[in-house]
Structure formats: C-alpha cells, structure tokens
Length: 348
Ligand code: FAD
Image 1 (cartoon, rainbow, N blue to C red):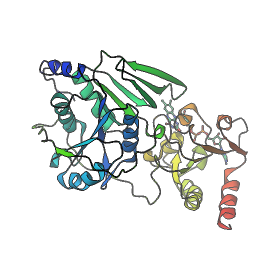
Image 2 (cartoon, helix red, strand yellow; image 1 turned 30 degrees about the vertical axis):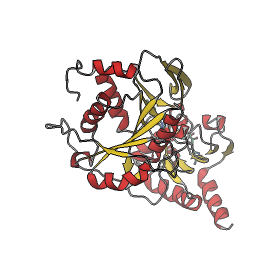
Image 3 (cartoon, rainbow, N blue to C red; image 1 turned 60 degrees about the vertical axis):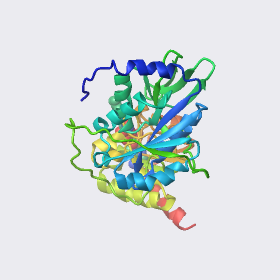
Image 4 (tube, helix red, strand yellow; image 1 turned 30 degrees about the horizontal axis):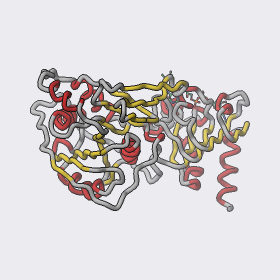
C-alpha cells in the first residue's frame, strides 16, 4: 500500500540531479545469512557499465549490517558504502525500506541511477520509490549503456516471455533512473582489495506500517541455489508424482552436484516446491548444463532456461518443442535413461 505524501518537497531536489555530469549509481545490496546475494553482485556489475561512481546500500538489523560492512567495503567497483540498521529492517519489507531509500535520494549525494537485482523484494521497492519521485523504473534489464555526453541511458530487456528484446532509452531529461537487473545476464562482481568508506544513515521509522512480517519458512537444502547453480536437472509433468519426482531426479542431481528445477506443470501438480519452478513465472536460470527431463518446452518454460549454455532434453515425443532449443536431445523414456545415466556416472 502506498501512502500519499506531498511530492512538492522532492521536486526542487531533482534540479540538483540535473547538474550531475558523471553517473553516480546507488546499488541496493541484498543479503542473506551474512553474505551479499549473488544477484546483488550481478547488479553491481551492471552498475559498473555506467562508468561512474557507485555507492552500495546495505539495510538490515544491526548485527547483520555490522557483519556485512567489511565484506561490502571490499567489493570491486564500489566507491562508497551507505548502511542503515534497525530492528525493523531485519525483514526488509518494501513498505519499511522504501521511505529510507526515498530519504537517501532526497538529500545529499545527487545520484543518477538506482540499481538492484530483479529480486522479489527489490522489484517491489524500486518502482515504489520511483513512482513517488515521479521518475521511470526499467525492470529486468539484460544490458545497460550510458552515454555521458547526452546523459542518456539505454537498456535492453526481454519481453513476451523472452521472445522479443525491447531497447529502452531514458533520455537526459530524466535525471534519476531506476533499474532492476536480470542476474543471469551479468557476472557477479568479485571482492576487490581496497576498502571504501562506510557511512551510517539513520533509519526511517515507520510508525504504523501497513504490513507486518509474520514468519519466514525456508526450504533447507544442501543443493546449490537454483538461480546460481552451474548445473540444473529439471523435471516436468512426466515425473508423475512427488515421490517419483524426487526418487528419479535426486540421484542424478547428487552425482552432478546440480540444483533441481521443475516445470510449472510439475509444481502445480504438487510434485515439486514452488521455489523450484523455472520459467516466465518462476526462476530465470542460465547454468552451464540444463537437463530438461519430461518437459515439453512450452514458451513460458523456455523463457526461464533458454540462455543455458548446454541444454540436454529427454522426451518420448520426437516433436516436443524442447528439441528445437536442445543442444543434445534424446527421444526416449526418461525412466530408462535416467537410471542408466546415473549408473554410468557412478561407475566412472
Ligand atoms: P507437459 O507440457 O504436459 O509436457 C510433459 C512432457 O513429458 C511431454 O512432452 C511428454 O512427451 C513428456 N513425457 C511424458 N512421459 C515421458 C517419459 N516417460 N519420458 C520422457 N518424456 C516423457 N511453465 C513453466 O514451466 N514455467 C513457468 O514459469 C510457466 N509460466 C507460465 C505462465 C503463464 C501465464 C502460463 C499461461 C503458463 C505458464 N507455464 C509455465 C505453463 C506452460 O505453458 C506449460 O503448461 C508447462 O511448462 C508444461 O509443463 P511440462 O512440460 O512439464 O508438461
């Protein structure tokens, strides 16, 4: 829910942005378990393409922020770090973080860009603040270029489930540009050697928050995280039920050190958890190896995996659309192929 606050106090400040000659990006760095999310590190890489200064922003509880400052200070590409801590930021609800971001953008440094991963939190926070500041937000970008002479920024972003690429330009008249980054399109920024200055920002207390965090339920897994895994073994409707899904895919994923993914049909039928869905309305992945087992290859599924480096498909139907994008295709029964493959890999 968006509260209405007058924008009048913010408009004059935009005029200070207009004078900014070089780009200066503010990158929202999300984190979990004492580490910066790799998707945020990809956002940092994207921000480096702008060719200017980059300030990172960490928001969290005071313990989290204390732990993360020395890590973030050394990130390659950062020129400064802002951090804000408060118990209310332990679960960074968009309704609580947005006022802080708005405050940072309305005073002090004349930022030209606000950047984040295209994560579920950030894609709620950034457009919210952009709307309040009356500037554009471009989402899920896969490339970015900034022309300093004209002060315009050009982005590409997939549309129609990845079947078309839109090129979008934010012209010089727009002095503050927000964008979220598709993490698979940019390498994660590595740690550097030098340490940037870190500055604390007072939290913005939201007296009567419109939403409240009740609980978080996390699926614990020893497997690599689906969005960042270099190998993914995915199953579709052909896996019949949850038990067969797990008993068929797990031995193969174990031996390959792979994450497990699923088509939406498999998720909707209850074979696999929602967090495993790959596709337009699931996760977008681009691993070194993607194995599609008993997945037909609907465009909505392809939207989430077609940029994988090597696609292997096993399907009984020789006309299954997945074969049009597979590098290696096997027309076969997965219940024969997968156990045989596991046996062969085990014997090596
Ligand atoms: P099916 O299309 O039923 O394919 C099953 C395949 O298994 C068939 O090709 C069959 O030949 C093969 N098969 C059967 N038995 C065997 C066997 N023993 N061995 C080998 N092969 C076998 N889908 C997604 O995956 N991700 C999304 O994010 C997503 N978002 C969507 C968003 C919207 C708005 C809409 C409308 C749809 C979305 N879908 C998404 C659904 C999508 O259109 C398909 O319905 C879905 O991907 C089909 O899943 P599937 O390939 O597992 O099932």
